[in-house]
Image 1 (cartoon, rainbow, N blue to C red):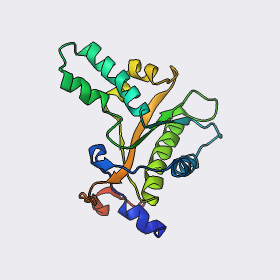
Image 2: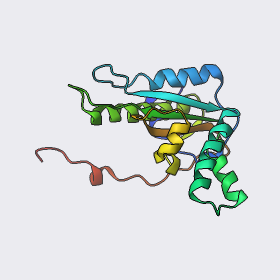
Image 3: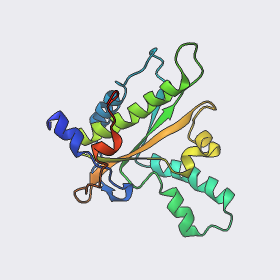
Length: 189
Protein backbone atom coordinates (compact mmCIF):
# COMPACT_ATOMS: atom_id res chain seq x y z
CA UNK A 1 0.00 0.00 0.00
CA UNK A 2 1.40 3.46 -0.83
CA UNK A 3 2.49 5.85 1.92
CA UNK A 4 -0.68 7.45 3.33
CA UNK A 5 0.29 11.06 2.62
CA UNK A 6 1.45 10.23 -0.88
CA UNK A 7 -1.83 8.41 -1.43
CA UNK A 8 -3.82 11.46 -0.34
CA UNK A 9 -1.71 13.78 -2.49
CA UNK A 10 -2.11 11.66 -5.64
CA UNK A 11 -5.87 11.14 -5.66
CA UNK A 12 -7.48 12.40 -8.85
CA UNK A 13 -11.03 12.28 -10.17
CA UNK A 14 -11.48 10.31 -13.39
CA UNK A 15 -14.54 10.78 -15.59
CA UNK A 16 -16.86 7.77 -15.32
CA UNK A 17 -16.67 7.20 -19.08
CA UNK A 18 -12.90 6.75 -18.64
CA UNK A 19 -13.28 4.00 -16.02
CA UNK A 20 -13.10 0.47 -17.40
CA UNK A 21 -12.94 -2.97 -15.86
CA UNK A 22 -11.86 -4.62 -13.94
CA UNK A 23 -13.70 -3.10 -11.08
CA UNK A 24 -13.21 -4.05 -7.46
CA UNK A 25 -13.83 -7.63 -6.39
CA UNK A 26 -16.52 -8.44 -3.83
CA UNK A 27 -13.90 -8.49 -1.07
CA UNK A 28 -12.52 -5.14 -2.25
CA UNK A 29 -16.02 -3.62 -2.32
CA UNK A 30 -16.46 -4.79 1.26
CA UNK A 31 -13.15 -3.14 2.17
CA UNK A 32 -14.20 0.10 0.48
CA UNK A 33 -17.52 0.09 2.34
CA UNK A 34 -15.82 -0.73 5.64
CA UNK A 35 -13.46 2.22 5.22
CA UNK A 36 -16.34 4.50 4.24
CA UNK A 37 -18.28 3.57 7.35
CA UNK A 38 -15.42 4.67 9.65
CA UNK A 39 -16.09 8.39 9.45
CA UNK A 40 -16.95 10.94 12.13
CA UNK A 41 -20.50 10.31 13.29
CA UNK A 42 -21.38 12.45 16.28
CA UNK A 43 -24.03 10.65 18.31
CA UNK A 44 -23.43 7.34 16.50
CA UNK A 45 -26.50 8.00 14.35
CA UNK A 46 -25.17 6.42 11.14
CA UNK A 47 -26.83 9.19 9.12
CA UNK A 48 -25.94 7.52 5.80
CA UNK A 49 -26.18 4.20 4.05
CA UNK A 50 -24.87 2.76 0.80
CA UNK A 51 -26.45 1.34 -2.35
CA UNK A 52 -24.15 -0.77 -4.53
CA UNK A 53 -24.83 -0.80 -8.28
CA UNK A 54 -22.89 -3.49 -10.11
CA UNK A 55 -23.44 -5.78 -13.08
CA UNK A 56 -26.90 -5.64 -14.63
CA UNK A 57 -28.27 -3.69 -11.66
CA UNK A 58 -26.54 -0.61 -13.11
CA UNK A 59 -28.75 -0.83 -16.21
CA UNK A 60 -31.88 -1.63 -14.21
CA UNK A 61 -31.32 1.58 -12.24
CA UNK A 62 -30.56 3.33 -15.51
CA UNK A 63 -33.94 2.27 -16.84
CA UNK A 64 -35.58 4.09 -13.92
CA UNK A 65 -33.52 7.17 -14.75
CA UNK A 66 -34.40 6.97 -18.46
CA UNK A 67 -38.13 6.52 -17.73
CA UNK A 68 -38.14 9.64 -15.59
CA UNK A 69 -36.22 11.56 -18.26
CA UNK A 70 -38.73 10.43 -20.90
CA UNK A 71 -41.63 11.63 -18.72
CA UNK A 72 -40.12 15.12 -18.69
CA UNK A 73 -38.88 15.00 -22.30
CA UNK A 74 -41.40 13.11 -24.44
CA UNK A 75 -39.56 14.35 -27.54
CA UNK A 76 -36.32 12.64 -26.43
CA UNK A 77 -34.59 10.56 -29.08
CA UNK A 78 -33.67 6.91 -28.66
CA UNK A 79 -30.03 7.99 -28.33
CA UNK A 80 -30.87 10.42 -25.53
CA UNK A 81 -32.85 7.78 -23.67
CA UNK A 82 -30.03 5.27 -24.05
CA UNK A 83 -27.59 7.88 -22.72
CA UNK A 84 -29.76 8.28 -19.62
CA UNK A 85 -30.08 4.50 -19.25
CA UNK A 86 -26.26 4.23 -19.23
CA UNK A 87 -25.79 6.83 -16.44
CA UNK A 88 -24.81 4.23 -13.83
CA UNK A 89 -23.19 1.83 -16.30
CA UNK A 90 -20.31 4.05 -17.37
CA UNK A 91 -18.01 2.53 -14.72
CA UNK A 92 -17.89 -1.08 -13.51
CA UNK A 93 -19.11 -0.11 -10.04
CA UNK A 94 -21.19 2.73 -8.64
CA UNK A 95 -21.83 3.19 -4.95
CA UNK A 96 -24.47 5.67 -3.89
CA UNK A 97 -24.09 7.34 -0.54
CA UNK A 98 -27.54 8.03 0.85
CA UNK A 99 -27.87 10.78 3.44
CA UNK A 100 -30.35 9.96 6.20
CA UNK A 101 -29.93 13.22 8.07
CA UNK A 102 -32.90 13.97 10.26
CA UNK A 103 -33.84 16.33 13.10
CA UNK A 104 -32.19 15.32 16.36
CA UNK A 105 -32.24 16.82 19.82
CA UNK A 106 -28.42 17.14 20.00
CA UNK A 107 -26.93 16.56 16.55
CA UNK A 108 -27.66 19.22 13.88
CA UNK A 109 -28.74 17.92 10.49
CA UNK A 110 -25.84 19.83 8.94
CA UNK A 111 -23.38 17.71 10.96
CA UNK A 112 -25.15 14.56 9.81
CA UNK A 113 -24.92 15.70 6.19
CA UNK A 114 -21.22 16.36 6.61
CA UNK A 115 -20.82 12.81 7.89
CA UNK A 116 -22.39 11.53 4.65
CA UNK A 117 -19.93 13.70 2.73
CA UNK A 118 -17.07 12.23 4.74
CA UNK A 119 -18.33 8.73 3.89
CA UNK A 120 -18.38 9.72 0.22
CA UNK A 121 -14.82 10.99 0.29
CA UNK A 122 -13.66 7.93 2.19
CA UNK A 123 -15.14 5.75 -0.57
CA UNK A 124 -13.07 7.67 -3.09
CA UNK A 125 -9.87 7.37 -1.03
CA UNK A 126 -10.41 3.66 -0.33
CA UNK A 127 -10.87 2.96 -4.03
CA UNK A 128 -7.67 4.91 -4.76
CA UNK A 129 -5.78 2.99 -2.06
CA UNK A 130 -6.79 -0.27 -3.75
CA UNK A 131 -5.45 0.94 -7.12
CA UNK A 132 -8.72 2.04 -8.70
CA UNK A 133 -9.88 5.48 -9.74
CA UNK A 134 -13.15 7.07 -8.77
CA UNK A 135 -15.39 10.02 -9.41
CA UNK A 136 -17.89 11.46 -6.93
CA UNK A 137 -20.69 13.04 -8.90
CA UNK A 138 -24.30 13.99 -8.62
CA UNK A 139 -26.30 14.76 -11.70
CA UNK A 140 -29.94 15.73 -12.24
CA UNK A 141 -31.30 12.33 -11.22
CA UNK A 142 -29.66 12.60 -7.77
CA UNK A 143 -32.12 15.39 -7.01
CA UNK A 144 -35.24 14.03 -8.69
CA UNK A 145 -37.60 12.57 -6.10
CA UNK A 146 -39.21 10.24 -8.67
CA UNK A 147 -35.83 8.64 -9.42
CA UNK A 148 -34.95 8.43 -5.73
CA UNK A 149 -38.23 6.64 -5.04
CA UNK A 150 -37.54 4.17 -7.86
CA UNK A 151 -34.07 3.52 -6.43
CA UNK A 152 -35.60 2.66 -3.06
CA UNK A 153 -34.81 5.78 -1.06
CA UNK A 154 -37.17 6.66 1.76
CA UNK A 155 -38.91 10.06 1.72
CA UNK A 156 -36.42 11.54 4.22
CA UNK A 157 -33.36 10.25 2.32
CA UNK A 158 -31.25 12.06 -0.28
CA UNK A 159 -28.29 11.20 -2.45
CA UNK A 160 -25.01 12.63 -1.16
CA UNK A 161 -22.94 11.04 -3.92
CA UNK A 162 -22.79 8.56 -6.74
CA UNK A 163 -19.20 7.30 -6.59
CA UNK A 164 -18.16 5.69 -9.89
CA UNK A 165 -15.23 3.27 -9.48
CA UNK A 166 -13.09 1.39 -11.99
CA UNK A 167 -9.73 1.10 -13.67
CA UNK A 168 -8.67 4.27 -15.49
CA UNK A 169 -8.09 3.94 -19.23
CA UNK A 170 -5.03 6.21 -18.87
CA UNK A 171 -3.15 7.81 -15.97
CA UNK A 172 -5.23 10.64 -14.54
CA UNK A 173 -4.03 14.18 -15.11
CA UNK A 174 -3.88 16.71 -12.35
CA UNK A 175 -5.72 19.97 -12.51
CA UNK A 176 -4.60 23.29 -11.10
CA UNK A 177 -5.15 23.51 -7.36
CA UNK A 178 -5.56 26.78 -5.47
CA UNK A 179 -2.40 28.09 -3.84
CA UNK A 180 -2.54 27.83 -0.06
CA UNK A 181 -2.17 31.59 0.35
CA UNK A 182 -5.46 32.00 -1.53
CA UNK A 183 -7.45 29.66 0.72
CA UNK A 184 -5.75 29.75 4.13
CA UNK A 185 -5.89 32.44 6.78
CA UNK A 186 -4.24 32.21 10.17
CA UNK A 187 -6.39 33.54 12.96
CA UNK A 188 -4.85 36.45 14.79
CA UNK A 189 -2.46 37.43 12.03
